[in-house]
Length: 171
Image (tube, rainbow, N blue to C red; front, top):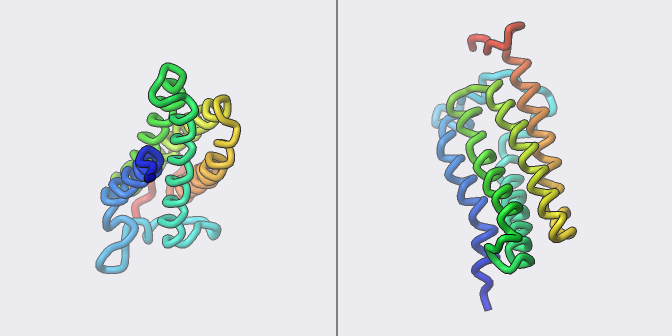
């Protein structure tokens, strides 16, 4: 028997990620081969662009599965599930809206503030999941690690492309 609840829980975060990717069309890849992201300064440890798609697919699927386990362990959308699934939904919204802030609007500093809020919300979500099902930490830890890396990367890109006042240098 197909477990549609589990499949839906794993597809949902990916769907939001795919929609977010549409908002940055031309900012990471373009028909001319040069995009805004190509023109900004990045640290030597910046991953190649092709890494992000597979990494996010794995992370979204993993966190989706963790959310399903919480849904299952709490008996569905019950009172016990309200806090952890609300935190999950909140961190997902922050996650999905980071890309437009960074890639579409080129607000690198605001994107850093955004991702710090995401870090806090994702940690709170993971902690609330852990309190219900300790095994969910195995599915949320890679996401938390990646967010930490992404936060450092965002901060470094911001500083590399800002003047002393935090203003983005003209490109």
